[in-house]
Image (cartoon, rainbow, N blue to C red; front, side, top):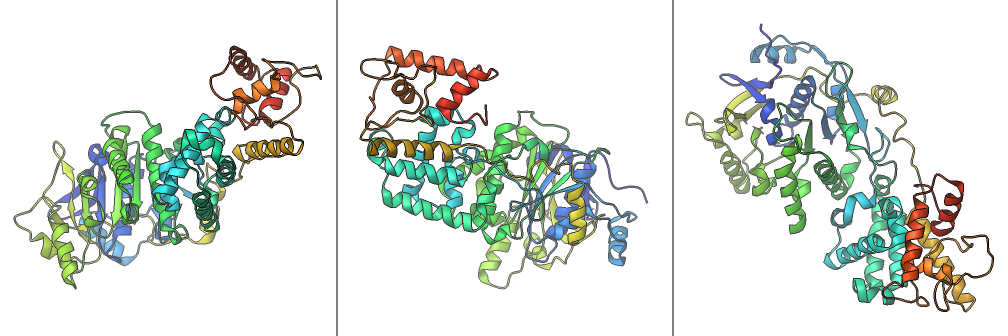
Length: 530
């Protein structure tokens, strides 16, 4: 038999003709739907293998662990050999390059990001906050953006959950001074958000925030043979917290969108992203979040990324997103209730009609491994829907053993890069020091030092150096770098303060010298990121 695998398309199955997904249209996104147990995971594996053969990296969530078998050599089982013959080719086993990832670092390399990268909108979604609580998160991020001592740290000092907890505590303590500029910071709201942070931490979500943060380029690699690496996220435990799962994948998608350059339509995608259990992304999502999802899906194709949603029914996906999904594979749906029947009818209407096929009737009759398919062709128009037999995967169907997984992780190209957490100085350390200084100043009945993390002088002199009428250089530097406490002057900076700020930034550019480092340690308290 002639080979059905070609360089410019993926062989998916056979109807009255061979059914292919053209790589030049693969970044037009896609949808794989069907009831539980009808073959969605196998279809996902067939697509992932095809993309890998074509040199296209893949990222896919593995909800049940079944997809992990793609890293192991397939087995010539009778039903697979027969299926291959039925669709027109001689069955041959294969294996594919795989990197395992795990937010909890147990079944793969850890994936981390920082709170700063996550942003207030997605963080609020992850914490399931109401509108008032989300407003507090926005205040916290804006305060971090405006505070010079924090903005001089990478990620504005917001790295992990302890940074946010400390920042919220600081805002609550200084609510009266902060309120006129940023809005009311109510102690009850702070307490509610702190409790949600504790819930997230107890669920293991704290492991997601930290450093080193994931480099997107590490998901877009090929092996020495030119095959695209299949990145598999172990998501079985992650599914215990569906909100964390959905928000994480949305963050990853948004991060790809923001960081990748515009490339237009390519001969093949740079990366293909499978979003399993996609309905979790859209359930109870606020309008602002839905708008962000729609924008990302609509525009990310120009970054060379194809997004494939995997869910039970097309109705799980909002219409504006569904309209962007040109490549479709529909496995069986059952119509036991009136609601199920309406869902089947709606699913049938999402396809380009075939006059020779009663689509709604066929959806309920499909056997395991069968599907209705429609792929983009010609100038990018969808083909008429056809009933097809999906081809068998070449790698193993079913999970890899724990021993196989450990062996793959041990020889992974990512080994050692993300496995250990780095806890550098951030907002937690800076704000704790600031609060301690303010408390010490109150105890001594003296004005607090506004924002410095160290009280030692920045020069050889031990006496106070004046930086304005009745003020010390320390007061001026403190106001410039951190703005203030009840004892400091507020409002527009004086000429002396402006000069001091310029000097401080000039010193920051001289970190290669030992003197510059000493001065900066006195001002910022840390050089971990300089």
